[in-house]
Length: 387
Image (cartoon, rainbow, N blue to C red):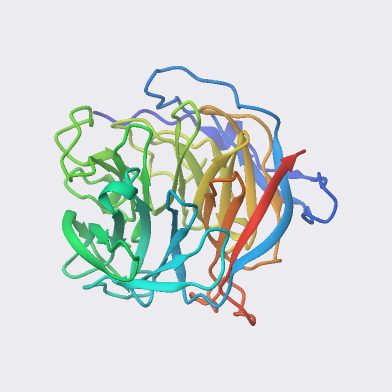
């Protein structure tokens, strides 16, 4: 379907300097930043309805370490017993963390992973029926193309095998792989891809790059996809975060170029503007819900909890809280932990409702990041409390 016209938001929405106040003593050091909430996008809720955020707004409270000494961690997923699996971008290994954290153990090595500046073993997500099928889905950069794999893990979590390739044909490159995986409330596998450092891919209808893809967990194309294709939405530069709200609204973070990073609400078949538009700059494609300056963000993983999207910033070295009400912004962005933990790659909601943050300081630490400190990389547990 043709792309929707983008309102000329650059004229209507200007960056503002926000003075942010701490909500809980000792949990964060707020600072001034330039942000620009932009026009709302429609919901992708299966029911077509928009539910209000559940419960009070939550803010970060106590922070504790649950794992240290990790090498280039990228993806994280929880298992039914509360344990977690972590992917290592550079080694191709999947690690197992016991419930509540602790010393990791190696489950196994995913074969055929090609490591580049941004490529390797990236996102992972456990099957909703993991106890029965022992399946974990993984996004791996490889040759000649990137792939989405279904892995079967042994009962003792000490070995794995590649059961099948669900999707290939995603162009590979040195950079801009995307790589985030989610199981949506529809039971399907959602995949964020990058433009493979070729902006034209994002707009090309015959390319899987610069897209959000949606497939069934057996690799088939859902009947309600926009076309007979895995492509759900297009015009994305580099999608490294996907999350779902309680009403089914689908959110995706997108790394911009020089001007704006984005948080988008996804709808089937729509074009989100890249490379013709970036954030509020340009008049092509769907407008984002929030924009952030790349120096303050460079977003990777996102998660929904307590009425907000929580967005991990790489170059910005902080955690962003973006209040949302379904497909609409519900307040100004708030930044937490600025500079305290370095680059934040992944944000996940644990079974107990806390956030787990995966730092990314052993990965490209000299490029917009913090040099590794003793104990890096680490996983942090952030308690969420009423603000």
